[in-house]
Length: 148
Image 1 (cartoon, one colour):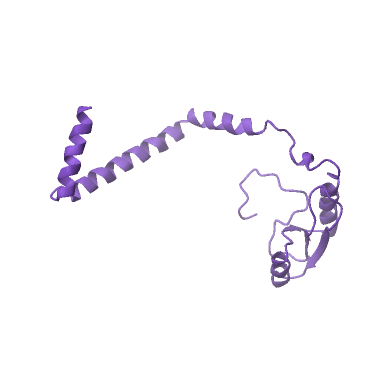
Image 2 (cartoon, rainbow, N blue to C red):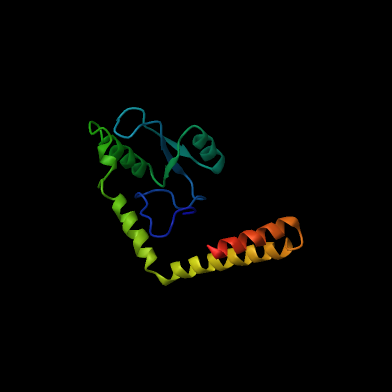
């Protein structure tokens, strides 16, 4: 599915082939509420686009999958939407992943490439401006910074 990173879990029955019709769109409701949900059928891309402009943004391969989605959203009734968060400490995984990436060689390779690239750009700009007043001021500032 375009725009979905590899390894992402997709809801059962969600449309993965954008060119296969009919597709069943779900919209109009709110998580935790049984009211307002509707299922529409799109038999071609133009119908689907029309329904998407009306707010039907979740699409399924079958009507039963769309109905199951509505049932799962409606089952949050009375929970105040608390069912949307499976574990309130999930954000800690992102912090752990950040520190895990710091231990990978590819991360440090990218950081080194960035520093070298930035240095080359600075040297190139300094050479281009070396004969101008701005260039001379930059050289003086660089020498002053090197002393500190």
